[in-house]
Length: 606
Image (tube, rainbow, N blue to C red; front, side, top):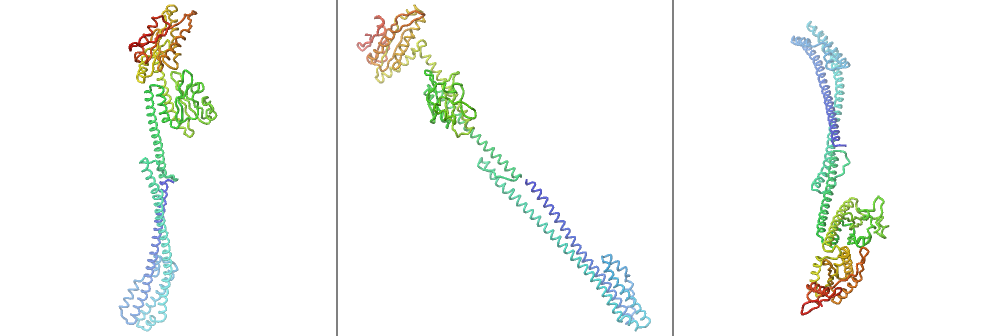
C-alpha cells in the first residue's frame, strides 16, 4: 500500500476518532448540565417548601402573640402576612412549572391544605380574642389539635422534601454516571487517537520512511561516487519508497551497463590502436620474414585466447605452408593443398560450428572427429581474387557469444591487414624481380649482377674466401637471328639461360649481362672447381639441339673466360680479368674455355 494511501487512512481515522471524542465530550458536558439542573431544581424546591413551613409558623406566632398580649401590632403583622400568602393552586402551579411531578404535588397540596386549615383556626382565635374570649382563643391556638395540625403540615412538607430528595438523588446519580461514562469514552477516544497518531508516526516515519530513506541515501551516495557495488534495498511495498528504490535500482543497472559499455569501448579503442600499430609495422616490413615476425608478436595480443596459425601460399608447390603459429594450436596440418580448406575454396570465412550443419576442413586431418564438438575458424588471405594465404584459429569453448562475436571482428580486421601487407610484399617482390631479372631467360639482369658482385667481392675481401667469375658468350649468335629470325635467337638465349641456371641451382649465380653475353659468379669455388663447372656447362651447351619452325638450328657453342680469387688478383678485378680471357677465347677460335693467368702481378688471359 502506498504511503499516501496509508497517510490518508490514518488521517481519516484520526479525524473520525477526534470527532467521536468531541461528541463524547459534548455528551459528557450535557450529562453534567443535567446533573447541575437536577441540583438546582432541588434547591428551588427546598426554598419553596422552606418558605411554606416558615409562613405557617410565622402566622402562628403572630396570632398567638395577639391572643396573649392583645397587642394590635401582632394583628396588623398577621393580616399583612396573610395577605402576602398566595393560594394553594398558585403555589402548586409554580412548583409544577419548575418540575415537580404529580405525586410530589399531591403531598405538597396536602401540606398546604393543612396550612389553610390552621389559618382558619387562627382567624377564629383572633375573633375570639377580639370578643374578649381569651380562653377560647388560647384553647384554639395552644390546644393539642392545633399542635397536631402543625405537625401534619411539617410531616407533609417533610414527605414532599423526601420525595424531592429521592428523585433528585436518582437524577443526580444518573447524570453523574452518564457524565462519567461519556467522559471515560472521551478519554478512551483521545487515548486511541494519540495511540493511532504515535503508531502512524512510528510506522510511517521510522519503518516505512526513515529506515528505507537512510538506506537509500547511503546507496545513492555510493552510486554518486560510481561505486556500483552498492545494491539498493529490496522493497516489497508498493509505495513511494518502493518507487524510489526501483528508480535507484534502474539507475544502478544503467550505471553498470554504462560502465560495461565504457569498458568495452576502452577495450575496443585499445584493440583498434593495437591493430593500427600492427598495420604500421606490416607496412614497414621488407620481406615475408619480417611480416611473419610481426604477426607472431601481435596475433596473440589481439586474440589472447585464440590459438592459431598463419599459412602462406607456396606458388611453386601450390601448397599452403605454415609460416608461424601462436598459443600452441592443437589441430590443422603444417602444410596442405588449397583444396583441403573450404575457406580457400569459397573465398570467405569458414566456421563449421553452431546450429547450422557444415563440413569441417580436410586439413584438420585425424582431428576431424574431435572438431565436430569444437570450433575452428579459417579466414582466407586474398589479393585480386587469388588466395595468397590463410589465418587459422581455434575458438575457446568457455567464451560468451558476445566475446566471440567481438573477437571475430578483430580477427577479420587482422586478416584484412595481413592480406594487404602480404599482397604488397608479393607485388614488391614481383616488381623487384621484374626490375632485377631478364624477361627472356628468367636470369637476373645486369642491375642485380652489379649488386651481387659488390656483395660477394666485399665478403671475399673481408674473409679471404675464394670467388670465381665465368664469362660466357654464345658463338656466332648473329647467325641464328639472320638465318632463322629473332624468335630462333630468343629460343637459343632461353636454352642457354636454362643450362646456366640448372647448372648452378645449388651453388653460384648466373646472370645475363646483355645480348648473348652471360656471367656466372661462384662464391666458394676454387679455380679448379670453377673450371670443372665451366667444362660441364660447355658440354651441356654443346649437347643442345634446338629446332624452329621445323628446322634444325644447328650446333650451339659458347666461349668462356674464367678468373678466380685469389689466383688472379684482387676480387674487384675478377670481371675485367674474366672478360679479357673471354675476348682471347673468341679470338683464338671460340668454343673453348680460357683461364686467365697472372703475369707480373697483373691478370691476363693464358
